[in-house]
Image (cartoon, rainbow, N blue to C red; front, top):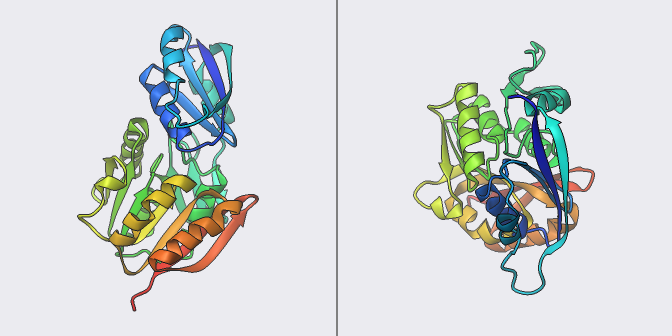
Length: 285
């Protein structure tokens, strides 16, 4: 792809969720083709030739119950971007605990890696750079997943689902409600050679109920976790583990209290800066 002129949107939201997810979906519908989650909102990119003022104004009118959650919006022109060159210039391979290498297709293989995952994120989330992805992978490194059934909710790029397969999971179900994430996960599953083990589905927790799982990975946002925890509990096998991240350490007690009320027991927690990932178990008693 050659150089192209883009418009960059920087948007601050309060509260973040569920409005960030809703806004990303609405922007994708009008041609925005790249998204980056920021601490207080998001950045989004659209070809200048595709951008339409009226469609944009309609897209950012979010149906909030009270005040508009969009605190600030800024549009800026970015001239002459070659996204392939930008991507290769800025994306670095990621090492986790000196054991897991997450790299793009254009990075060289490294024989020192115990586990190697090839990810081309496109518009999805979960490259391994974010603290929450790293935290969940650190938990997974400590677990024996051989012959277990695994569910990856909010799979993004599919990185956690692929890692579960590499660790010997018998079957993995990966679910994301963003079309571009679903498509990207499917591509990455093929790229890493696990089409027979990993099923990639487009949707949310409403898809659950037919199958049960030994391990559930849920690296999503706080509000989605709080809403979907009863469903996760219902499809988690007795004795199974639920790993949750995607929220700040200040929200940990709220998440753990909700899970504990359902009957899950806190096994441990891991931190990187302000982010946390918890491991909870469904007692077999």
